[in-house]
Length: 393
Image 1 (cartoon, rainbow, N blue to C red):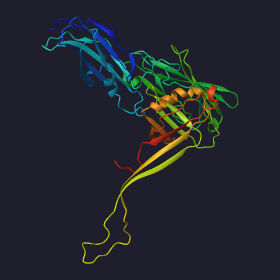
Image 2 (cartoon, rainbow, N blue to C red):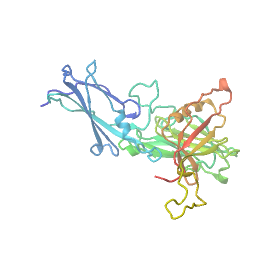
Image 3 (cartoon, rainbow, N blue to C red):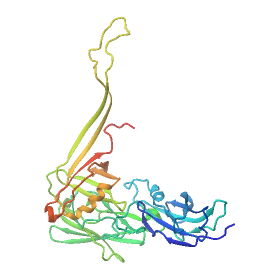
Image 4 (cartoon, one colour):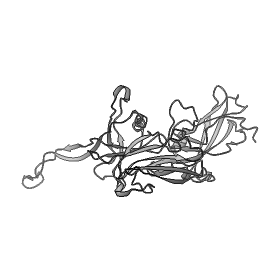
């Protein structure tokens, strides 16, 4: 029979959280002085509608009181483990989570269940130092666009790509496109993105960023050659101060651009064209053995004139891609840090057919440059191609 319940919830996450960073609940009860006392947390994690809490995964967690008598539950590892779908496949990589707290003695005496009043959401991303524990992490200069910019970027007229937009607070988010053309005219178009805080798949939406991405709202006359630049920004209530991103259309380039995308700290994608020289390397690693020559089990000793004394039996191939950026402003340094630590990146090697190759960044050290010290800023990155040459599973 319950004797009492949790008396205080001293710390708790917000309604929207980055699941790779700590998400901490701190609970207390007056009975903690017993040496056999411990706190319990029944953590439910699910996707879909807000009301579908019974359809997910449940974890039972136990914590002994700390020196202050509180039970501290960091649920981030559990929530993050539920975000397993690659970001390229999951437009809205979000889960709901809700804990129920109690306490127990080793002799079976327990308290009354204490459940948080609302469920929180965990996003596939992380906070940066010096953010405080349980900070939302979403508020940024471009919010609700889920990127750190920079404000000026370059793009090719035949590029695809999209931006993640957080739509899980407002019912609708307006994304304004402003295009500038060679004849000096400008035009605008607005995309209205619908969202909901009561469904995980309605928390994040994609809006076209590349000129040939399906749904791109600006007119492309004369094959797009008239479009000089365009800006994408969020508008409407609450977003009046949000920064936009201006894309300059690059029509002339010497090398075939390599289009790279990677999961950023918001769990969405940043994109860049590597405009300068790129090199693809193909290397093999083999295992060999020396076969026995001659027909030693026959009536006469002969040998096959085509047989080799060195025979391959396993050959693995590794492909790497080395790319070079254009000369860039130092405002790119922040998203390049996120590229270096990303766990998901792709080379969009066939844009008309939207074909991707998974890549893993091999470059693990960069000396970041600044305009004051270095004047011109240009970087080289090397990636391992994540798919083998041979289709062997």
